[in-house]
Image 1: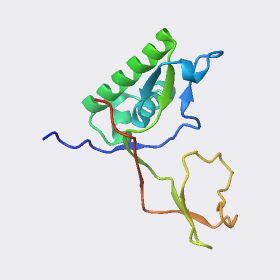
Image 2: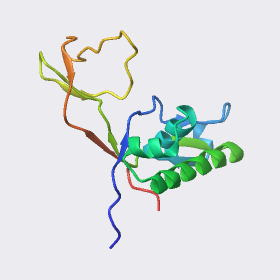
Image 3: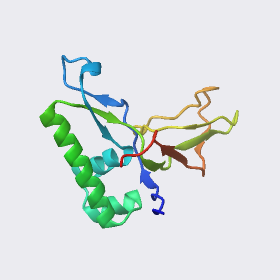
Image 4: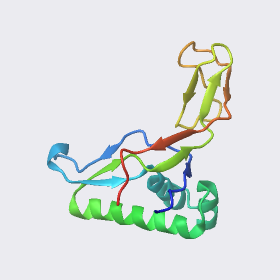
Length: 148
């Protein structure tokens, strides 16, 4: 029996789930599936420019595991770009880190994937109160199946 996959720590969820070539309807395109943790690996290494050891520490995986995730992600993106495929970002085995919030006024809990700009305040989506704090819980994300 194979070992169950380890949950990867993710700090960012993309604002959209699809990227596709312009001018071609999505239904006519083949898709390349990119897991959320693969996008996180590309974001940390290529966008933030971090060293692999720091990236691995932030995702709470070993450096060789981070390298495998990054290599797989880069090859999927390259294949999609070269072959004109759509990229669908969803699923995987991840824990959304540090973004689970709770309103101290009404008790509403929610997950927020976007970072807050300096000086910007979070407000409860239910009662609009600014009395919001981080909650100790984590949201676990899981796709509709995993790639084999």
